Structure formats: C-alpha cells, structure tokens
Image (cartoon, rainbow, N blue to C red; front, side, top):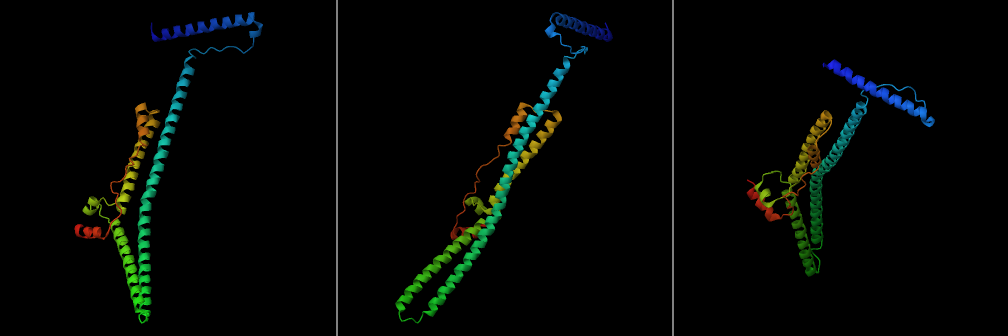
Length: 253
C-alpha cells in the first residue's frame, strides 16, 4: 500500500468516527429534550486532537522562556548594584586622600600661626619683673609647641606613606601597607570581576533567546554569578611613625 492509500484510509476512519459520534449525539438529543440544544451543525476537522497539544507545548515553551529571562534580569540587577557600590568605593579613595592632604596643610598653618603667637607673647613679656614666672611660661609654651609639631610631623609622615604609588614597593609589601593606591586596586579588581560576570551573563542571555531555554545546569551557573569574591584585602596597616618613614626612604631603591 502506497502513502496515498494509507492517507485515504486514515481519512475514511476519521470520517466514519465523526459520523458515528454525530449519530449518537443526535439520538441522545432526540430522546432527551433537555439536551436538545441547537448548537449548529458539527464541522468535521480531521486529526483536530493534535492542535491543542501543540498550542499547549508552545505556551509552556514561552512561559519557560519568560521565567528564565526574569531570573537572568534578577541576577543582572544584583551584579549591577554590586558594581555601583564598588565604583563608589573606588572614587571615595581619592576624595579621602585629597581631604586628608588639605586638612594636614590647614593644621600645619594653624600650628605655625600658634607658635608665632606664643613667640610674640614671650618676647613682649621678656622684661617682666617676675622672671621665674616668665621662665615657667617659656618651658610650658616650648613643650606645647614641640608636642604639637611632633604630632603634625607624625600625621604628615603617615599620610605620605599612605600616598605611596609604587604597587610593588618592598616597603609596602613587607609592611602590608594599605595605601590609597592599594585601596583603589581592591575596588577596581572587584569591578573587573563583576564586569566579567556580566559578560558571561550576556552570553547566557543570547543563548537563551536563540535556543528558547537553558538547561538546569546552565541556570545553576547563572545563579552562581552572584557569588562575587568579597574577601578582605591583605593590606590592612594604616598607622605608621617617623621611623617607618625613615625605613621607606632608605629601602625604596
């Protein structure tokens, strides 16, 4: 039997089935007046049982695509928020460095001005009859001035150490100095890692739109993209003294 004959046999069987169901329905309506509701003539649609199934599969495929796209967008939103946070950390380092430098200059100016005022007061009171009191005032003023200058020297030295730009400095590596440059590099590396994850997410999205779905293993890999390396920097020391500055000056070669 060729294909045409087989096709005609199938149509004949479908037509016979349709006629039988129509006769049974007509007899049922004739015997039961409550069921005799005119719905119009039945129309024969051979093999029409396959169409709803195809529509159902297509609907499920579209729903799965939308759901996976929604999951990808949620991952993208989280990664972009983390990247924005890292960008702000990166930019904040420069602001802190500039603000600290200006504060040190301002305090040096105030310290020098205060010392000048002390010197002027001591000079004006040099001929006082109470020479002993004047001598005590000189000692107190001298100690105060020296302590203030020493405090400013230490603060300036500490700031200068944190401003070291050489990322491979032996002094920085051995002392684990958390310089401003190291702080920025820590934030930059985190942004770079997030950018790579966003690129991977873009590839998954293109694959999803092309194929219509991602496997469970691929979706699990998408979810893992939100696990960004958030380790603490190994450069943690930020407090140094004048001796440390001397070590840096002699070791930076």
